[in-house]
Length: 345
Ligand code: GYE
Image (tube, rainbow, N blue to C red; front, side, top):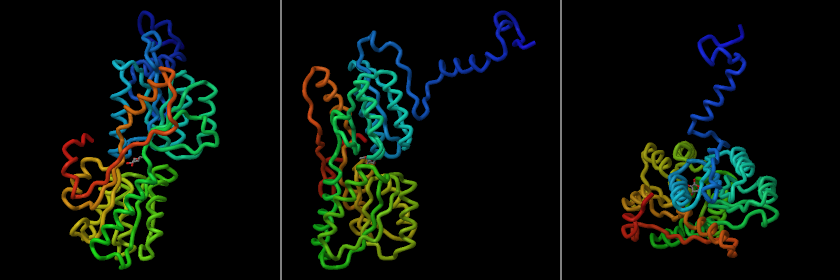
């Protein structure tokens, strides 16, 4: 009674130990990690590896996948690193959990791309108290004390938004539509994220200069194709006179293009709607080449190498800058041919 039936050792194992045994097996066998859970560090110190905890936003877009690959290809054992990678699946609470787990595992560095700007003061203070340098990648944090992070490696999203506005102004001029009323809808990225805020503010700063530009709506579609489709479908039902769609990433653009087609409309150079996109992943550049997307503002996801340079500089006791700007281009049918073959993502 009260014992597992069977032979040998099992006879001596009390039934109430079973859940513990199952748990040990699960921890031992599992390779998949849920949100906030990270792979266990075994003995990286013995191997003299630098332990880097990376907290990623999610896998919402092609840009994000390319960014993840860039980080994973740099922080390898061959390069002297032990990478702890966590995917927060677009939830800030998962990201906070991941950061706390990195702190308790005493990683050497934390690298993270914050889902949204606000809400990081406490956990970053904890990292600071644990003496763990934090490097912000891609989106930014809004913290009172900027000593809570060492540096940020990422794009100037405001400049990207301005590029989109400036391109539109030039395009309308060339088309001799500069004086006509222009109705614009904006598909925004994840609410409260730096890339969404910057691209919105940058574009609006240019739009304000043109009285005939009329922004009908700015709606978040969370940087995904599914939401881009859904939001665009709604907008097309609401308005029958949309001239321009500004979609803050390519994935939402793909969804919006589906909705436009379903509504019996066309986009691009010869189309009914001018399509402006951001990121410039290869699949979108093909659509630029085909004249379906008018312009794609580049946002470079290949940030791993730059982040690694910061860490090696810190390892060598060198000073690092507070920001690392990234160079970016604007792609239209005129220049896309020169670049598309080299695009790896
Ligand atoms: O544009 C989008 C992604 O923050 C720059 O996030 C990043 C954005 C990127 O999911 O595709």
